[in-house]
Length: 85
Image 1 (cartoon, rainbow, N blue to C red):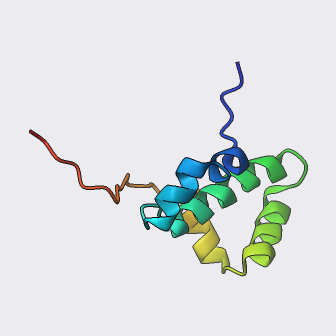
Image 2 (tube, rainbow, N blue to C red):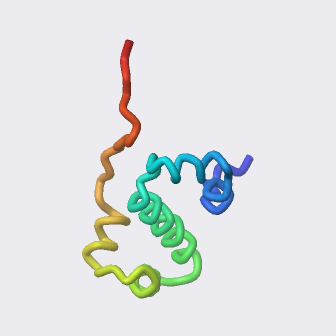
Image 3 (cartoon, one colour):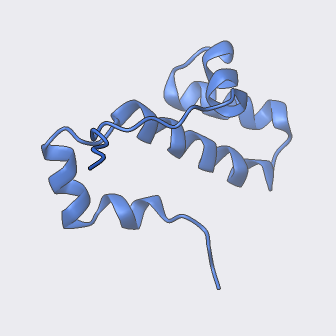
């Protein structure tokens, strides 16, 4: 069973596009998820420093910003309010 997250497939769905149009998708976190997935793929072929440089150039972000995206502890956040009854 393949548990790999296929972002391209998810982003192309009608439901995702609807959620995006309603501004329920955190675009920054979506970009960061893409970056983390790309880093994993790049590391299969390149060194850590080369992979880092490729992503810095591709996304026009600093080394400290990329470091935060890849290695900081993430706190789960939800744009949808959680309602308890």
